Amino acid sequence: MDVGIVGKPNVGKSTFFSAVTMVPAEIANYPFTTVEANVGVGYVRGKCPHEEFGVDCNPNNSQCDNGTRLIPVELIDVAGLVPDAWQGKGLGNKFLDDLRQASALIHIVDASGGTTEDGTPCKIGTHDPLEDVEFLDREISYWLLSILQKDWKKISRQSSLEGMKIERMLHERFTGLAITEAQIYHALRKSNLEENVLKWTDDDLLSICTYIRQTGKPMIIAANKCDQAPKEFLDNLSALKDTIVIPTSAEYELALRRAAKSGLIEYEYGTDTFNIPDRSKLTDAQVKGLDKIAEYLKNYGGTGIQKCLESAIYDLLDMIPVYPVEDEHKYTDKEGRVLPDVHLMPRGCNAKDLAYKIHSEIGDGFIRAIDARTKRVVGAEHELKKDDVITIVARR
Image 1 (tube, helix red, strand yellow):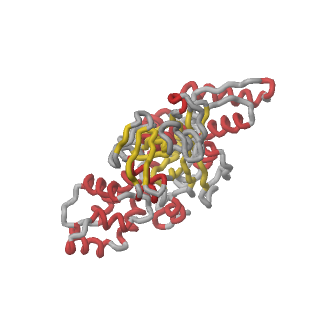
Image 2: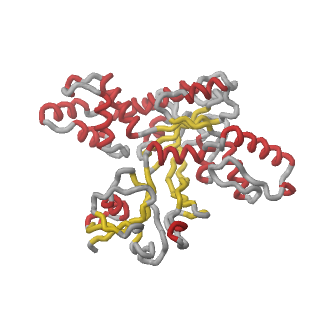
Image 3: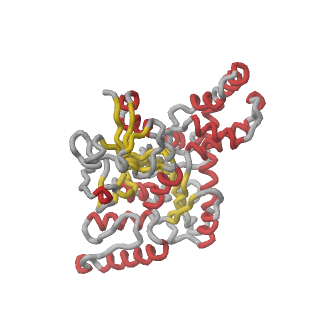
């Protein structure tokens, strides 16, 4: 499961990526700084069950920080997108190819209005960020349309004359884009088009692709550089219908994480405060800069960076953490590690889905599952809940 960090050039995408992952990325004040996609790992927070069970955990695929389980999520910072990218303008073809595996998108928007449509710096307040939201939505929809149109005549004939399900055929056409058949089915229902696919027009296909984009590549808006943004711009972004908009400052988050890594401050990701253990170790410029950041955190309740990532996972994708163990009494795996792994699973998934998540052979050999809290045996269709601890029993 990947989260794509997207947007036009020079809006803070690479700064956002570096802040979340602490992976160095080239950052500069000119368009197309990012040419090759940057890939790294960020973490969403969950409550580790070890305190509830009164045991010490031994995390394997994640980390535990004082009872907070840090669950890894892969992020990809792709090349900047400019208008008509779907036709190959700028680095559009590469951007869209890098975007294929993203399950959700965080769209970094320059809320200050300080960059033109192609990412060139301009006077703050002179470019409407709403235009950037609209153009990126449009570019992805037209990209999907260009993929669909290549075989549309064949697809429509087979669906109409041979009775093949259109959602299954569209799913096959969009293979490799991390879009499920269920998402396509949902998009078709929202499109509300007539049943005869042979009568669908290009506008109808664009409408379908727009809904597929909304369901298959859901998006959060990170209103970046909001400390410089005119109030009107922030208000307009916040008023977007059916859209999660989070005020952010990637620059401040990166500064805080670097200072924390250097031991200059104590800072917990996603919080609205930090502590300076020894001000004597800081220069006057550093103290001034941190005081400015502290005032920002007070006004906005945090930098918004961690909130964006967690909203993408927990709100857009509606994922829940689940902890598989082999011994439901000791909460261990076969190597004796306590609560070693945690997996992010779609809400509504069942015990057998978890078995397949662990390994395909375990899914194929599924016999039963056991709820480690209640010690009750549950079947394959048992719906999992947030923070469940589950033992899977399977044929070996």
